[in-house]
Length: 136
Length: 79
Image (cartoon, rainbow over all chains, first blue to last red; front, top):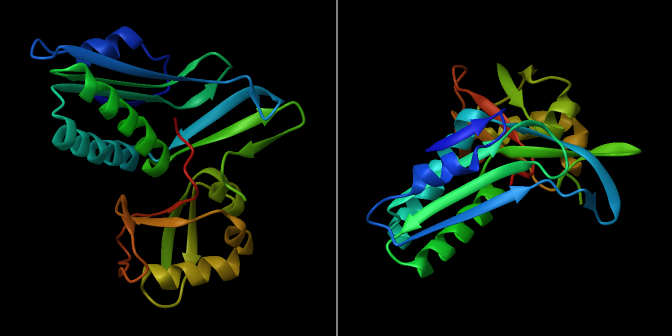
C-alpha cells in the first residue's frame, strides 16, 4: 500500500499492510517532526506533495527494493498538511523472509524517497519560515 | 506557445500560484527552462530545479506538447 494522506498515520495499519506469513521480519521506519533545526525552535512543519507523481515515484523505489531484497510485503504512508513537533510525517514498513534484507530495504526506501519523491516541507520558526533545502 | 505550469514548494511562491500560464519560445523542456529563468530569475537561485512532464522527470531535450502536464520540481524535502 502506498498513500499520501492529510490524516494522522495509523502505524499499526501500515505494519499490518506490509506483513506476510512468508516473512520472518517486518522492519518499520517512522519519521517524526523534530522540534528544532540547528538550534532554532521549530513551531510547525507544512508538507505538500505533487500527489500522483509522488505515488508513482514511490512505486519505482518499491519496485527496485522488491528486485533487490525480495520484499514479501511493503507499505509507505506520507503525511501532508500542517504537522506539529512529535507528529509522524512518514512511515515505511517492509517484510522479508530474513531480517538482514528488511533493514537494508527499509533504509534504501526512506533514503531514496527523500531524494526523488516530489514532496516538500516548509519549516516555521518563531521569526519566519523556510522551504527546506531550497536554497544553498 | 502558452503552457500551463504547475508549481510546488518554493517555486509556487516564486511564480505566485499553484498553476501559472506561461509564454515560452521553442518547444522543449530546455526552452521552457530559459523562459522561466528570464521571467522568474529567483528560480536560478534554487539548489536545483527539475521539470516533470506528465508526472515523469524530463530531460532538457524532451519536447513539450500543449496538452502535456508540466510541473516544476524544486529541491524535494519529504520524509
